Length: 330
Ligand SMILES: NC(=O)c1ccc[n+]([C@@H]2O[C@H](COP(=O)([O-])OP(=O)(O)OC[C@H]3O[C@@H](n4cnc5c(N)ncnc54)[C@H](OP(=O)(O)O)[C@@H]3O)[C@@H](O)[C@H]2O)c1
Image (cartoon, rainbow, N blue to C red; front, side):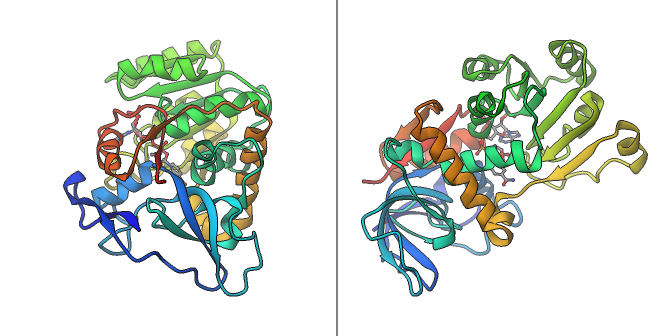
């Protein structure tokens, strides 16, 4: 079977499409004939060699797939071979055959195309969990998202109206990305320039002068000062990434948190896969159900085959990607 393999830390030069033996499901696992797999920034972090994103080289990237059940491992009674499913794979999703825990494999309801279903195990599930479980979003609250034009950023814009809506603000790393985020549904988007005070003033003005209730921040600690400045009393900041790589700064001193009545929460999809897989599976099901109603529109860019993935990872690595990318594997 064809699979994307990263042989060492670095760039696209170390990503190769190889012909490998298909993996077999172990106990409690399911093997899936993959038709579509989602691309995610976490694969780029592994490729860069960021600490904690790969246990060893070669690395087999890919953490979300759609396809059909190929084989059941010991102790697994369903879904039946041939059933359309999606799954959160720990590694190896960017391959024609992937293996996932049965607990993280979910049947796809009628009416959800596989290239869209492939965005649910990591992308849409994470977005739902960020807003609900970690962010405790309540209808009508204001939300600020950094990296608003990316995969998670655009998914927030698509999902928020289904959770009750609220004012949605975003930041992007380059001014030319602001329009893309607005097209996906952001009310206001500003580039993170060199003047944080000016950015804070613009974002506050865009929220009618009020503090922001929920901030979703994948930028390590780089924007944390800004987040705290903008936060409404009782507001929540969810830290869920470290896009720039490197060692994040320590969290702000306690008086700053007390004074701001701030909650800072960490979120890790990978952590939940290990410690609370049922939460991830429930979020995947909820995303699929929303998609099946036809009410949730999530545009994706479909790459024709695995050979196109390293260049797409380059776009993500350079901060030049827009929206969500999926690769076709059939
Ligand atoms: N904790 C979790 O479980 C979890 C799950 C999924 C995703 N994430 C995180 O959520 C973020 C979005 O993920 P995604 O897959 O949807 O990717 P994405 O947003 O499509 O792409 C990553 C974005 O990170 C921003 N960025 C900031 N500094 C960067 C740097 N030094 N190099 C490259 N990009 C940089 C860029 O946007 P701007 O320049 O506009 O900021 C870039 O577009 C990522 O940081 C990812 O690690 C976390």
